[in-house]
Length: 395
Ligand code: ARG
Image (cartoon, rainbow, N blue to C red):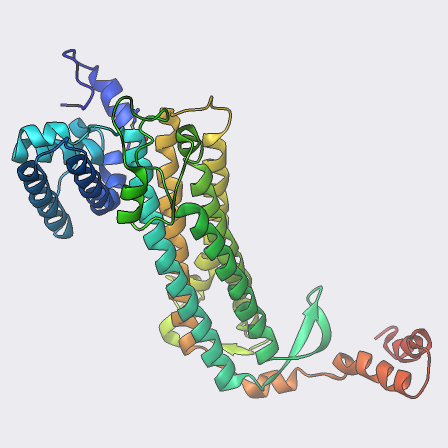
């Protein structure tokens, strides 16, 4: 039975269509919705809207849902529509009247916002850790081979001398910027929408929004209830943007590793354990792992565009369109986490072929240095540039 059941039957096709993939997607929200539901119930009890016994029954039933969820046994049925209804159904079956009271002073609109916010906070923490591990893997490789010289390229042509430390160090520094963006994103996400209900607050009841925000660990309350609705999808697209920024670095690094690992260059050695084979060519050891990391950037760019598209052009307030912002968010977060993990593994076991790197340090890489040696002796830069440059004409 749906939460909005008023005694008529919904067309089966419409029911299935409006539910979409929520019973599957919402599984990852169960624990967060339970946490928020408990804090909400505690608030209702403080306001005298639930008795101590009712609160206790709800607390136990919510703990049971969390236990079942941990074992993958908490079911969200299509008939439930989504996680919020599934939880309320369970609570009503277990606790009777208390279950029928828990939705006092909230709407599924602020409920889903709250659950997603808690999920995002948790995942941003996980991404922060994975970003640090990825950076640790870069630092470890720099520690192993940072001093090895490497040609620096512009336009994919030899430019100036560089080193493994300079090359990989650029990704270290960029990851610190990604971390700054993560902290800023976290600040936006760290606001409680609970108690804004459908976007217009709750009549007659004194909802302790500051209390529930504090209990859920939010830094502040999202004040304007309609803004809470406006921020649905808007904040998610900020999180997804962070994902694209992180994946952009991984995309570049993957491109470098693929190129530097080519037989023709051979600066980087991918051990067999990182390479996948060909079904026809027996000799092949391919960097599929890096190619997929490279592609995930584009996948998540697509998710960002999808999400930003879904939320546009709507009148202020909730619309069912917003339900479709969950999948791009989840796909983007999953992709980012798995790419960070796999790149840390790759960096942990690739080698740098010092001989091949040194052999590539050809004369032309030092042309700029030669020009500057002349500058040091008093030659104007443009003259020094021409003097050295002439040697390379027609070569
Ligand atoms: N599953 C819905 C979503 O993610 C929950 C909110 C439903 N609210 C409503 N007014 N129909 O958006």
